[in-house]
Amino acid sequence: MKENDLTKFFVTFSGQIEYVTFSGGVFDDYLCIHYEFVWGPDWAPISGLSMGSSQMSSIGTDPEKAVFNMPIDMVFSSTNIYGWPQLVVTVKAHNRITGESLRGYALALMPSSTGLREITAPILRPRASTTIGEWVAWLTGKYPELVEPKLLAHGKDNYLLRTESEGTITLNVTMMSKNLRKLGYDNQPPSYRNM
Image (cartoon, rainbow, N blue to C red; front, side):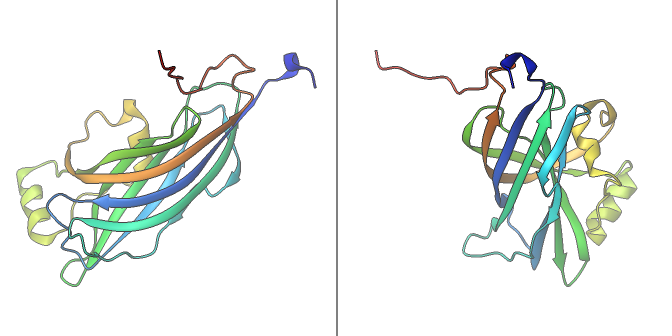
């Protein structure tokens, strides 16, 4: 195939969702996460799991951190970079008093340059639309949930969403690409020379 015949590039994201951190501490018996990739109209998944759920994780020696080490691996092809893949993560908690409840959502843009990257994204929890709703949510431990968490990846649809910050989620992701440079996209990390 000639270089002029190229119309697609390929991108691989491989890594893991390492842990979640809540600065006020984790007071739930167990936490679990659910992830889902979101991509634009010109992107097509080639291989990998576009969504998945983790095991239940309990708190270890650090009372503010729950470790998951949930693997993610996805290969995409595309004709342009519009709609670069994002990862939507839902964090759920389980305890004896309230049962299963939402701890929050995180949205992480996948790295655009090759190599290993550590990504930290805030965990946001939707707030009730009324004061009475907020009081009931605090009392029962049941907070509002999104019917479609992928809504977070589409900025035009979530401008009325009220949220509060709950913590952070940390991912380690390696990005590899093929044919991006041949199609005119420069995604190589900047090189630094000793002067």
